[in-house]
Image (cartoon, rainbow, N blue to C red; front, side, top):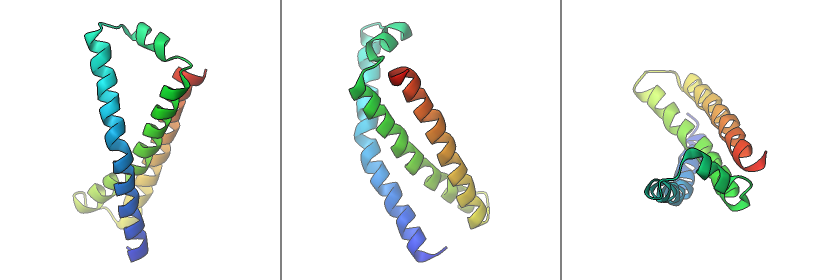
Length: 113
């Protein structure tokens, strides 16, 4: 792999991890709050529907996941499965696009529609 690309991917994964860490904690806190309050799925959706702040937070969550996960998956495919570097990076890019499309569609469905 080109050394510059390897450094960029490494930095992308570390930067996205720095964004993901507090978002995961916030997500878990929201889950704990909802469970302790005994909220149903319908009650959660009604509280979050059209909430711009939560929509923005979860959109950022999706973007960070779409940047972070595919880099790791590509490395695993290369190192553990023996895939060629080009194939592993292509699979990672495809996964990034799928995560973006599915995640942003879910955020839009809950917060925007």
